[in-house]
Length: 112
Length: 113
Image 1 (cartoon, each protein chain N blue to C red):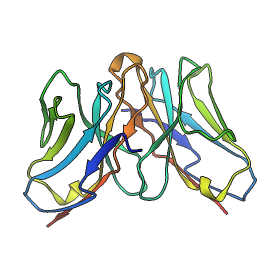
Image 2 (cartoon, chains in turn orange, brown):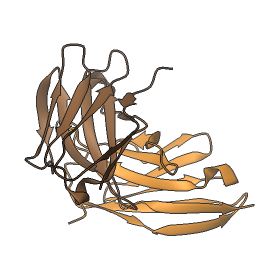
Image 3 (cartoon, rainbow over the protein chains, first blue to last red):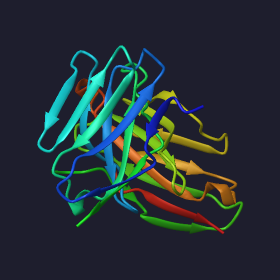
Image 4 (tube, each protein chain N blue to C red):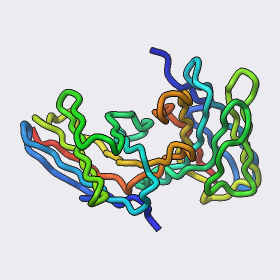
C-alpha cells in the first residue's frame, strides 16, 4: 500500500511553463515533506522541503504548497527549463521514525 | 561541499554469492540510511543507524545485514543473492538536529546474474 500517492506519473511541459506535481498522504503523523529530483543513474537530490506549520515555501523557481486539512502537497516549478527534465519524488516522514516514504515518482520532460 | 560516498559504484555478482556495499556519510552526519530502488520504482527504505545503533528497520530481507562503525561509515552485507536483488542501492545521511534532511549518495548498481 502506497502511503504517499503522487500524480501525474509523467508530465510534459513547454519551456518557460509551470510544472505542477501533486502528492497526497493519509498518515497524519507525517511532519516532514521533502521533494527530491533524480536524474537517470544518479542519487535523489534534495530540492526543497516543508513542515506542516507553513502553507508555502519558495526557493528560487521551486515552490511547495501544503494543505494540511486536505493532506496534500504539491511542487510548482516556475519557468521550467530543459535542464529540469528528471524524475521527481515527493516523500514524507515522521520525525522520530526518520525513514522517508516516497511517492511513485513523476517523470518530467521539458520541451525546448 | 562534501557528499555521501558509496563504493563500489557498480557490482556484478552471481546468484547465491555475497556482496558488501559501503557508505561514507557526509562529515558530522550521525545517521545513515539504506534504500533500494528497482527499475522505474521509488526508493524503498531498508534500514537506518544512528550513533552506530540500528534506529529503524524497513523491508530488509533476512539475508541482508548492516552495521555502522565508529567512524560512522556503514556497510550493507548481502548474502545468498537472488536475481530480484538487482537494483540501485542508495545510502543517505543526515544530522539528527537537521529535521531529517537526508542527502543521498550516488548509489551502487548491483546486478545479479
